[in-house]
Image: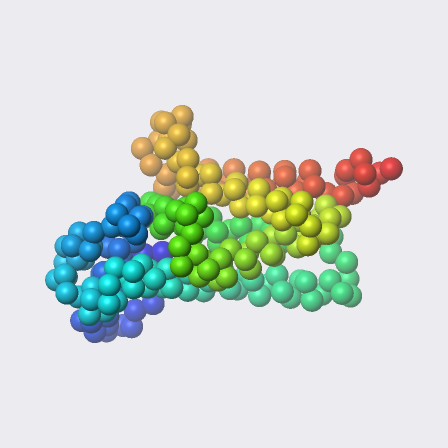
Amino acid sequence: MIDLLRAHLDANPSKAELARLALLEAAIEEFGLRGVEGARTRAIAEKAQQNLGSIAYYFKNKEGLYYAVAETTTGMMRTLMQPVFEQADALIAREAEQPLSFDDCLQMVLKLVEPMMQALLGSERMAALSLIIMREQMRPTQIFDLYYERLVRPLHTYLTHFLARCAGDDPTSAQAMARAHAIVGQVLIFRNAQAALCRRTGWASIDGAQREIVYASIRASVEATMRGFDAHSSPRSQS
């Protein structure tokens, strides 16, 4: 995500744009480590190599900076996921004329999971942002709606739809939504419980070849889960 932030800069960014970006990057780390209440504006300014007054200049106050972090990162993550969301919309539109097969649903769910893996696991520097999102899940603040409306709700809705079609469920049911949540959890566990995996495997960190092992494991687990949900292979559908 931090790399994505820089990727959206103009070829010749102004000094102000670079200063604002440096503050956002430093704030992601500080908010991830300490939460919005414990974060120190002085530490953010020092890490960004900016004077303390720059936070007030660009963001008004710490709460404004926290909102800017949420607004910027959710916008970048939505941009990353938008092409897959559009593919999901197209498949749902096609469904009225041609029922979806198990493979249609499986491939679409895997496509939805892929950018989620890239966003949350693609860099060790994403750990801080993941901590911010985790805190918002446990103790929602005013920015939870941003994460929910821009990212969680659309992703969760698409996952629920295709899992429900696969399992023969009502996509508006709590069971279908809970099953979609379980799929999300198969990605989040590799971020939230990374230390345990590294201890078990002897890895110093998860990058390069290690990350590919994780990605392959998630894909295989998602496929196995969906095959378990497949209405055509369940006792219910064979009766």
